[in-house]
Length: 172
Image (cartoon, rainbow, N blue to C red; front, side, top):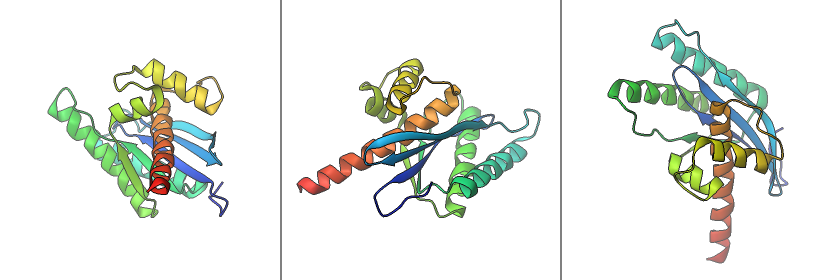
């Protein structure tokens, strides 16, 4: 599914991690959301970091080639518990951003609290609440992983923010 002149849009949501990167593709047509695909990219657990980053890049590149999303949305890095974790998360995020860049896909980033607030109405919502709302908005019971749920949430947040910005521009 690729966007057409009728205003439909396919958004790739990403929840990067060095051990598991969640992805979710949401297609919007006239304000109606449809789940296209959700899943995870899980590099080999015993591989070194550079190999895991390469797997993330390759996996996302294959996904982008196959489904041709119009835009991508990525959750911004949150403050990790330790600096080593923050660095690895940032590097995984970088691999995801480069995959999008290589395919000329514009990328937007969103703070985790904004994603939660956009979907649930509260910036401190827990992951179960977010997953529940993702399922409600997509019209199906969540059967995907937590990482995929977070990625779908980012994609839906992006679509909501685009809609809001269009409305705001129309008012001005």
